[in-house]
Length: 171
Length: 171
Image (cartoon, rainbow over all chains, first blue to last red; front, side):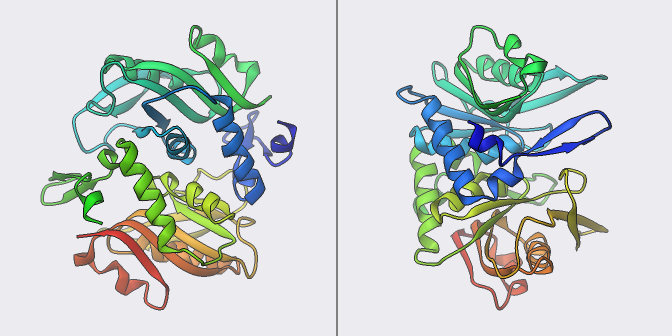
């Protein structure tokens, strides 16, 4: 979607030198850009059925509830440790140096439910993969991954082999 | 909206002893609860015109883009320091002990634009008030505040006097 790409701002050296950051705030602040992003995101999965949409903190929250609404599904947040108030399951994932952790309420996804996992960007795929493990540890089935931006050169898709993966804008 | 209240989970002593946390994840995971929340939230402001909807990190992200879509507006995130990649304005707000800070991209809101500010909960109103100052420092007009949950006993509404304030569920 080249019309969306034109609305994404590239910020060099953020959050650190040598990294080119794809800033979707310029896309979201444009009424037509926001509308097209949501409509096209939903169209990527047209005709499929999901029980839950899972969004990864915090930019996955920008799209998850809206897709859940579109698919008549419920929305489930995956958060950093200490943010969820009730009993939660945890999964670790690797960072460049060390590890980090994601959590999901244990009662958020039920056995056999079909789940769509969404985030703004897929880079190396580490958080997406950890989120799939959270869903599966509760008995859910990961029926798809959706991203606004895919950094193809980092091959996060390779890490999600076997799952349907869709994205709107590729670099 | 008592039907929404029934879907909100009360978690005692979170995040610390003596605090009763109103957990909206149980509302969001329910397809009908999510749908009614969004529809009624939009209905609170029916007939009004907004150029931008501003959502406060991170639970304001759950509702902001969807309301922006409904009002044919753009969406703008207000974030904690260090998260926004481009030039940003900052405002401090008071915590129980000390202060914290919120930021918004300087080019996110233009002079004269009418802005709706949304968040999941209004408690003391400190972050909402700081967000209004961010919008006004860029020349925008705060045309309304919308919250899913209002903790009336903390009187955050008193702090937002002069602005239209709407909420779906009150405690």
